Image (cartoon, rainbow, N blue to C red; front, top):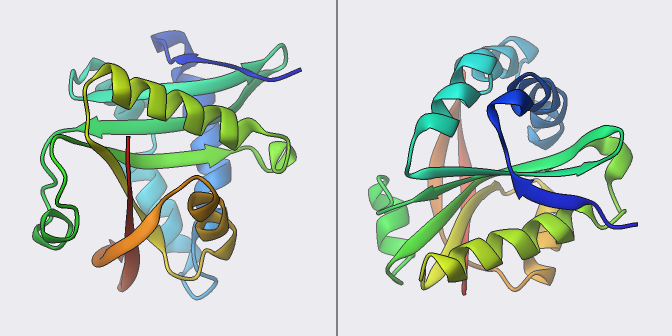
Length: 176
């Protein structure tokens, strides 16, 4: 049975923070220190931050769930890209950023990510967006393969600072 995908609610905040703490490290290159990953999670993926994201009208969190709980989530950001490298690479406007998209490791390969992506694209269409863009670590082959399968193409690069490292992410986009 496919998961249900819907907007997150404040009741989801504890489960979102827990899922984010579990899944974010899986997308990090092995050379990134565990302390740097933990600091990023504490700063950006805590309960307090998810509460802030839910209260921000420019952000939308979608969750995939089944009867047992959350299987995955996305964080979407509407508006102009704040990074000059991204703004130059992504030329369509208006544009929606797919800031975060993670599935529980036990749900990998089950269709959860595809269900979330379908909901992301439906949301983008409903908001009259021209395109969706995202940043993905160049070494995250699983994510790159998935995004290409979903119609995204590399259109540039950006810097992503994670602790003491500056990573070079691919910027990918696709029309809505």
